Length: 223
Length: 66
Picture (tube, rainbow over the protein chains, first blue to last red):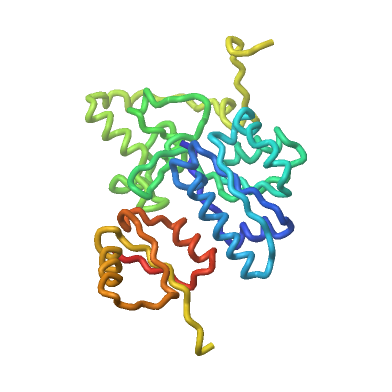
């Protein structure tokens, strides 16, 4: 899932400072399941902002709405009137949702209430960790299902490096060495010979090095 | 300011604290009118939204009893 984290309230207060009618807009998909920008978080943020701005002597209106997905036109179209009635849309979706609103309704002013952090999973209650860097050329079949791009601090293709100590990465004792994980899992699967296969230098053109990416599926296009 | 009496919203569990408040009523015991009791099926039902809403509507304090 896409994982996000709410911005500090003080920063959000600055984002809404020059606006009077604000729509706090949640998203019912990724940011709902990571407890950052779903219907409940919309309610908490809107309530907090109503009280915070009232204490500051400002009479702002904070309305609440949540759509199933902010990153698809069909869902945004259902709240077109609400978007037009407000002078700021305070989006609690990931950066894709924020951009989707402006692309669909170019006159809308939109501000992000959350920081989109990474693509990851909930490892434990209250702990999310990164798993995928969306590099565009998956190698997980060669690394026993552990991503060296997202989980190795150096994104090494042939690790580990000298900074691997007792299974941890030198950047942080909380961070596991991805290549140690790869080694351990290959060993458990009886595939240690895989470690000896040298992976060639990665072609990063499928990642961000190739500029903004696009995907065309002719079988799905209606021309 | 000495006469300030806070408005308190009390979220009470149906099975204990609310039952106690109910019993207090049956016994004709008095408690201040600035305490507003809201019954919950269980205080486990209490959500941050309920607490925020209470403060937003003017409560000076929130009590959770269960």
